[in-house]
Length: 287
Image (spheres, rainbow, N blue to C red):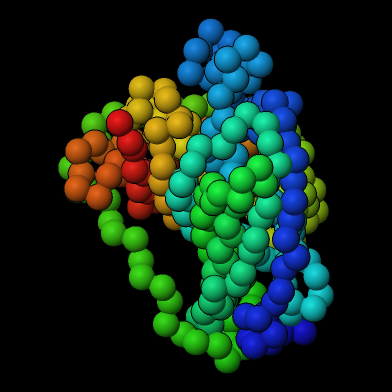
């Protein structure tokens, strides 16, 4: 089965209502690997109920329709889907507990051609059910590596600007626990690519890879630590491109450039494999 452009483009997603509380907030942060250093105050504030604070990137797991690409009606070869890009715009910081509604639409499906895959662009708006306020807008690009050539539009959305040529101003290393993907999936992303070695091999990976959104959350925490004094509520935008897989057990180095006109620029690398895994990152920080 192949992608039917009109059918997928007009797919209707039911609203997803989700109630969450401190245990969910802590579980999300533990899934990123926070708490590995119990003496790190910047980590502890996200995994301990006394003074608990929510990471803005937790929005990616709230009000989400789940791994809907596995529905045969989409025409997507779900085993070959990987995350390409993620954008988060925060209109109001997430409360520690509450009820939210996620409302998702397909914005575009780009046909890169036979053998080159497709880019599936979606947007999800997250609303606070207490007063109906818009909390966050999330945009995502999923790379459907086996689904090119279905006859859709070929012109993609504008690319993010390249990073500065100069050396980064700061960096932070973060050791990802071996069990991180198994914990992170408890927050809602149960794609077996991140847990089942057989599925990972079928997709062309040597072993289960880390969720792209898990590495994205780690990057968000690192950016907040280096550019916002550890106050994650000051991060109001976080964009990144996923350029290579991350494996549980990797050490993720986040580089940041401060003082750029667009905002804080960042990337993540795994030095041991000499590979950039998150590229062209952009964060906006409020005072």
